Length: 194
Image: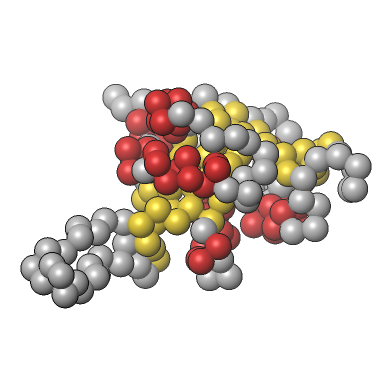
């Protein structure tokens, strides 16, 4: 029987030329390091390549890719050689989890060139779909310092609620109870099975 971790690491979704996959082997380590080097990831520093690979392999990662396979035309100096192109890494949502009871969402990023296309919403909808499919999940959690954009976004897209933090003074700690939480049914209007 396949483990929950192996099953959850085989999921994928497609929309037009875009792909979201939970296969950690697809995520290019060097691209992740570049992202962590940027000013956009203000909450973390880049790690060495081996540590980055280990981090990705030990989490549930949702990689976002542009699968447009069009290769650039041959260059005048090299008319026959085409650079092979595979899916282009354009986003990530990393979830620290035991694959059973808890899921902590972190390191959510979409390339600036692909923002305003609804891809960040789609990425988090996929994370939400997986978390809702986990029958023993007690809670999903995240922390954000962005009260203006991120808090309303996670409330709307994932049904998260602020459980700790004060606007303008601290980070928002957000959570959503899962099916493994004893209060899940009462919060979601479901009756307990007898």
